[in-house]
Image (cartoon, rainbow, N blue to C red; front, side, top):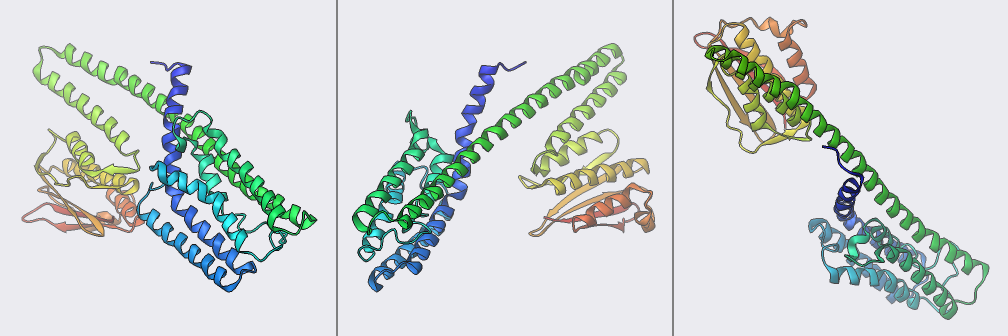
Length: 386
C-alpha cells in the first residue's frame, strides 16, 4: 500500500531526533576531550601567572577525566536536563573565568583568537546537530545561534573591560573566534541534514522492499497454493507442491537474513536445513543459541551448509549429522554423512563447488577440510575466524 506524502514526512521526522541523538551520544565524550585539549593549549600559550596556569591545567585534566567517564556512560549529558543546563552554561562561563586570570590589558591581544575561543565550539556543534536536546521547546533550533550571539557579546564585553582597546588585533581575534563557533554550528547543521537525507533514502528502500515482498507473496505463495489445490485429491502431489512452496519461502527468508549486518546463525542454519527436509535424514542439528556473526561469515556458513548438504544428497547419503562448535576466536561447522565418500583431491579441483567453498573460507582467514568417516562417508569441517 502506498504511503501518503504526509505520512512519509511524519515517519522521517519521527526518526530524525532519535538518529541525531544517537550520533550526538556517540561523540559526546569527544566534546570533553576536545575541550580538555583547548584548555591545555590555552594554559600553554597564554601568559597566565604560575598559580593560574596550574589551575587551568587542572581544569584540563578534569575534562579529560570526564571524557573517559562519559565514554563509559554513553548519553550521560544528553539524557539529563540538569547536566545539559550546566554543560551549556559552562561553555559560556569558563572562557570568562579564564579571561579574568590573565594579566590586565592582555585579553584579546592574540590575533589567532581570544582566550579559549575554541572551548564552546563543540557544545555549539552538539546543540546544532541535536536541537531536540531541549525537548519540545518551540524555538530550540535558535538555541545554537543564540549561544553564538551570547559568546560574541561576551567577547566584546571582555575586550572592553579587560583588554587595552578595540585595536585591529582585538577585532581580528573576535572575528576568528566567531568563525570557530560558526563553523561548529555549520558542521552540526550539516550532520543533521545528512541524517535527514539518510532517513529519506532508507524509507525509500524500505518501501521498495515492502513492495518486492508483496510481489513475492503474490507470485510465489499464491501460485504455490493454487498448485496445491490443483493436485487435490492427489496427496503425494500436494505434499510435493507444499515442499516446493516451503523451499521458496525458506530461500526468501534466507535472502532477507543474509542482508543484515549481524546474522543470527541459528535461524540461518534452521532455514537452510529445512530446504533439505525430505531429501536426507538429519540425525543431528547444531545448537547455536543466540550467536550472531558478521555478514561475510554468516553468508559463508549458509553457503557451506547448502553446498555440503547438496553434495551429500547428490552422492547418495541417507543420513547427515550437523554440528556447530563456537570457540572464542572462531566458528567451526562440522557436516558428517554416511555416503560413499570422495577423495581429498576434489577440494583442489577448481571445477568443483567444494573447491570454491574452500577458497571462500580461506579468503576470510578460515579453511575447509575433509576427514574420512567411519565406517564410510565423509566429515567436512569448516572453520572461520569470528
